[in-house]
Image 1 (cartoon, rainbow, N blue to C red):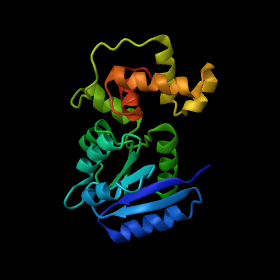
Image 2: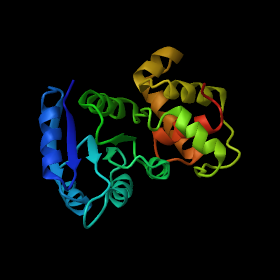
Image 3: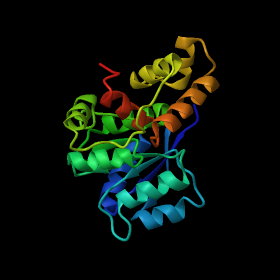
Amino acid sequence: MSKIKIAIADDYKIFREGLKVGLSAEENFDVILEADNGEELLKALETATPDVILMDLKMPLMDGMEATKAVRKKYPTIKVLVVTMYDDDKFIIHLMENGANGYLLKNTEPDEIKKSIYAVHENGYYFNDLVNKALLKKLVLKNNLKPSFNQNVELTEREMEVLKLICEEKTAAEIAKDIFLSPRSVEGIRQRLIEKIGVRNTAGLVMFAVKNNMVD
């Protein structure tokens, strides 16, 4: 497989260095750029395109929240993994709604960081215990933090089938094999689901499925 290109946005150089050392041990990873803040990151993205950005939240000039929104708007295919010290529920939901593909704490084990990079690269999202279905269910069902989905969404049987398989963390190729379609057709259905439901990415689809009790 070709290497997964990674960017690190964090104002703590020592944290970036540690992360870089940990990631470079993985032969499929290539750290192609680093940034001190969101502004520097966006400037760097004009000339280099990573697959995955590891994004800190608290940075000077432009924080990770603003930078995530900006990346999502301008570079929809780049995956954003938030890596932060904040484990506040409101932050997590807010960021997932604004297009983050996963959310990790800075004390996360190196192996989990690697696993999450592979997951967002292949599936478009990574939900760990922090953002897992139980937490989302608890938050979303309490209705104190309502993700904004389109109302009265009507899904076809095929769309429901694909949505459930997405929630099982299957890649487009695996889904295609399961339901005898081409990966391209699966990608088309996924895109249609995103538009119908009114979310920003695959993570949003999973949140919608959780909210509507479509997953166990």
